[in-house]
Image 1 (cartoon, each protein chain N blue to C red):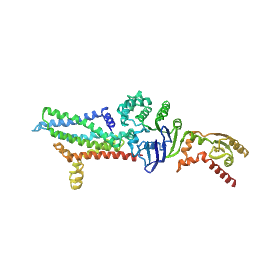
Image 2 (image 1 turned 180 degrees about the horizontal axis):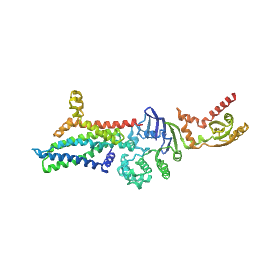
Image 3 (image 1 turned 30 degrees about the vertical axis):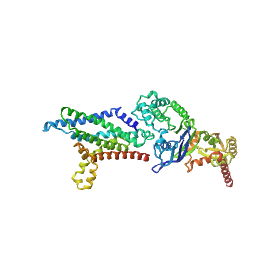
Image 4 (image 1 turned 120 degrees about the vertical axis):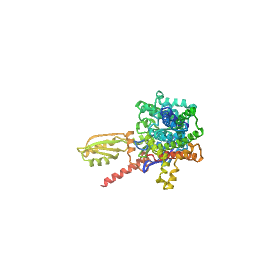
Amino acid sequence: MFPIYKKELQSFFYTPFAYAMAMLFMLLFSLSFSTGIAKLDNSHTWAFSFTEMFYSVILYFIFLLPILTMRTFADERKNGTEVLLMTSPVSTGRIVIAKFLANITVYLFMLAGTVIFPIITAIKGEVVMSQLICAYIGIFFWGAMYIALGMLISAFTENSIIAAIIGEVVMFALLFVDDFANTPFISQYPAIKKFLYAFAAQPRFSYFSEGFIRLSDLTFFLSAIIVLLIWTYIVIEKRRWNRG
Amino acid sequence: MITIENLTKYYGSNRAVNHISFTINDNEILGFLGPNGAGKSTTMNMIAGYLPMSDGKVTINGADVTKEPLKAKRNLGYLPEIPPVYPDMKVHEYLSFCAGLKKVPVGKRKSEIDRVMGLLKIKDVKGKLIRNLSKGYKQRVGFAQALLGDPKFLILDEPTVGLDPNQVAEVRELIKSLKKDHSVIFSSHILSEVSAVCDRVVIINKGDIRAIDTIENLEKSFTVSLVLHIKIKGSKGKAASIIEMTKGVREITAVDDEGDGVYSFTVQLEGDSDSVRDSVMAECLKNGISIIEIYTDRPNLESVFIELINRPAKKDGLRELLDEMPDESGDSDETEDEDETEEKEDE
């Protein structure tokens, strides 16, 4: 398992890939940050909220995370290296986990870059640490769920570009599923509304951003990650059976 | 030892491999021969545990590939048809990754990588990105990967494709030298390659096994009798009956119309005596058929191969094939011939 993890990290860090992603992420974050600072003039409290920034950051995820995960399985299949992994004494489950952990590592690297903004704020002002830490935990889980989702989509196809585009569409839909559920039309049917709400990550993230860590929210993200990874495993195995 | 029992693969309703069984003994090189699309790669993918089989069983050193995949794969090195290389990695990075994947102990990795790079003569490109390598080098990097960890069993799917003649010879020598402590199964559609390297061959076409034997036996069993080629001018039917009635002729296998009343016959003879040629010639001349050309020759391995491949698929391909081999079939053929002559006499 470790060699696959290491190889994946090499493919991210020996190329400009991980650095470009982290840079882009920081650039986007800094846009939100500077908007937050710009608003200070008009506010009486001289405060701005990092958690509000995180909301816009999640929107950027939709464009960044599919790019991170698109190659995970699609490229293995395209290069014919899937055969190598499958005929090595490593089980498919471990391959999935190793690749997930590698993607998570790059994601943590991206998040780590954003820590600089609270640090700068802390130097000149005050940061509510509890809220910030909770928001980071929330955003970490949300991103991890999206990574598992992106990996699943990558397992479906041989073409990484298609994997990225489908990933963006699905993540976009999931991001706004609660808004959709709240529309007057859907509100007429409580059953459907309830069903759609079950997939909504945003209301759960809002608890994190307010400084709450609720077991039910953690369970939501963790179970989503586990289900998506198992689904990925099944898709890979199923493709082997259906090949031809 | 690798045992393959009743291996079958369906792609949808399309049967790619049809109940094949054979074994690969220790320290043996088994050639897997067949035209393109015969089911070679599918079979090898199944043996290596990449493709699940529709039916049947593969055991590698006692471990079932489907039931104990990790144990079975530990003894296996596999070079698929397309070398499984990462274009963005350098050669030594790639091999070091593969060594880890194959659970080569950390302390031995460096020497192991050096060893396989030496065997495949790729040391000079070890710092290059794989994407920049030529096809032949990529193929050899893929081959080196299969040798990592010194697995007891090697499955090589067309290992010499894309190599230049010089490298082909080197790789063949390498495969031969591997025999000492490995079992090798390697596929090819090139007959000369298989006959140069292998102890035994499995000939496969359209998913059926057509023959399993040593090259020598195959050659012997199909080349004991001569083939007579005769080109005549005159009545086709008359010539055919004269040829068929001549003693020592087994059957006419082909007739070609060459225009202007010229016909060429390909005739399978019994035994390997040239005297049949003389008697056919004498009979024809006696009946006023002019002979333009006549000669006998021996079928070579190439034509044996082509015959085996083109033989219509039979339900029990192997058994029927064995039945047809001379030591057992000689008698039945004679009786058939007698029947034919009797029928002709009746007419």
